[in-house]
Image (cartoon, rainbow, N blue to C red; front, side, top):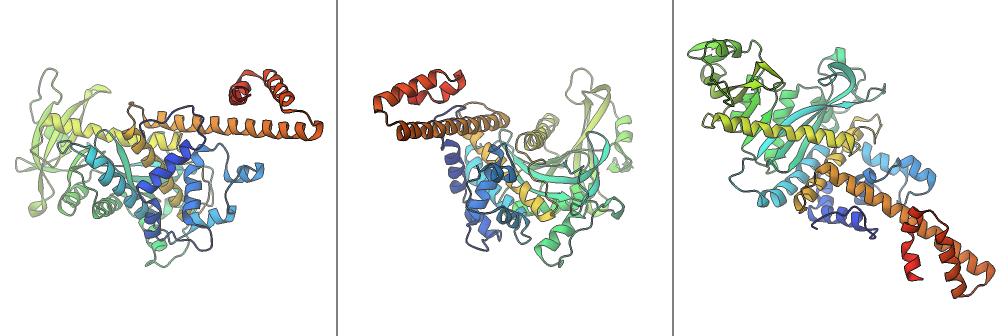
Length: 460
């Protein structure tokens, strides 16, 4: 497939593209591997496919059933049982699906010289109006600088600079009991549901290392891992280097954390003040080699001080555990971290991450996030296959517009066919009279309805 058209007369084109994606990357087999098996007679793929395509509908499950446009062979309770299943490992599902997309599709299209990266960041999963959501917590929102009700959606993604693929996630609750608003359901700590809830209460930096370990275990590789200052603790950087064998490129906080520089323990402010800065329009102000950690556990790293574009009198500091990288290359690679911000925006604004599902089960929320991540993977594949340089958001609008056009056209044709059958039955007119009546009827319709029924006039 080279492109996704905005307007088409083929009512099955979007459905066909979803089918191709699911078959190409063996979505059904991956669901089976993650314990998403059917309990009764309804195939799991039917339910998953329906939920996957919910983004193309402007109505909820309830309203679809209320208005009679729901075409599934299962009930609303079947959907909720699927989402609330505590035995389905949704983290593993997104990891395995992303491994299929990255290793079998993205990597062969990417040059070996291109530096691919892991990107880690978190975003607010807002549930401000909720009161009884499982593990609901007071979470600090970095954008509004206020505490809100919800979760921190910790996300690990992969990027080659052209395409970004979400790998896995964890909905983090509060590690401190004072910020926890609702307790989690009791589960055996050895079970998947119990481990999932225990993970939600741990520190984000510890969970991040676990997600990276799971991604590499699934066969996903990258040269560097990028994250901002919220995750750049020396302990985390050391763990990623020694346990996961990954070099870090991250932004550091201007706090009291000390590094070994010229045999002294100094923080970044002290290091900056003791050195002469580069003049002119250089991309960086200062670059030094330090040791992160203490004694035998320390590793060398390069600190690159750059100007803050938002404040010409301020500066920022980047760290790279690959000391052979040039300063310009450190700055260039760290710029790829912005891909995950675009991903969060697309998921919340276009893929219905927050507003589509409002359940209270922690298992169901994880299932919903995994389905949204799978939608984004499909759009990433479509973007890479597309000859035109369309963005993810534009592709999403194309799909949505196409589904709306198809729904309206089909509805108008069904109404017209029913009207013509009734006229033939009750008035016993000839075919020629029916064609004349149809043409006269269409001419009296508004222009947008005539466009939807243009095929009938041509056939007549």
